[in-house]
Image (tube, rainbow, N blue to C red; front, side, top):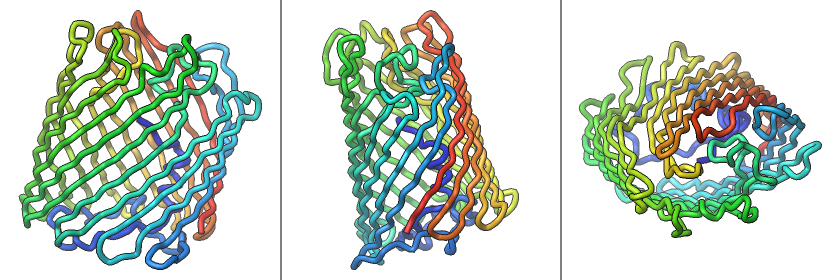
Length: 420
């Protein structure tokens, strides 16, 4: 899984193209829009106007980052710092139709280090998505995306110890999705099919990445019942099949499922959220080597609106994730977090976030704890230019006989975003 950088999050908060509205949702019992968060609030004077092209609007954008990182290899000792330039051109295309929708996206990320030239990389993403509105309350949507990415040195799935590979690990992800929704007044049914194909670039026998190549297929359904216009309860079930390309002695191929119940609500003018609890299990083809992983599953988010200018968020999850540690097929990932966004002025936004994660590996003696703190200030000059300043702190503590690296990492990022 790839996480957005804090500077990217800041850009998403305030300097972005207007969001498309789905007309078929009008009057739905499942809308939760009584409150508008700081990130969601429209800012017409600072949103990209776009370039009209027939029935579509084009939103070109480029962001330039300058980052100072005091531990680019994410190591405990012998830290190396560097200044890093990033240039990220993007083009989003959205249809202007009253019914149905079609969109495209292309983006790149050119990364250049001041001193450590071997860390220089390029990334890019190509994506398309569409929606067919069958009747009011019913639609079918789909998407396809291809990404050429670099695994951050600080990623939990990076080599052990962190920074061990001679060059950053490159990989491709091809993702497709198909979703169908049918709403019957108080009842809404959703079916979803997702497919992800991972292809890692090898770095020789000593740093073999091909064992990570795999396909992940997930399929599921969700039934929601609106007990009131502000509250719905639901039941959900999702199955998955994770199939690794190399069928050797350490093949981590598996099948699993997650079942759960939950509720989404907008209880008042102050609080809204979505909470789910359930059970999860992952069973491995090499059952003699890898024991099945199971347990309590959870996912949730809450938003609190103390004022119209401040939004406070809480989130958490408990899931089964894939492992790259020798002797372990997977681990249980526990995460909790909090965010706060404040609109100091119409064009000045402040944001802070904290997350704490604990990963318990199965099959080996290893436990990881990660704490991440970030703070961002966004200043929107006009609808074309935005300035962002972000500080990020990451701490990882790994323990046990098979422990990974423990490290601390500080980043300071200054960004300029231009859009048209």
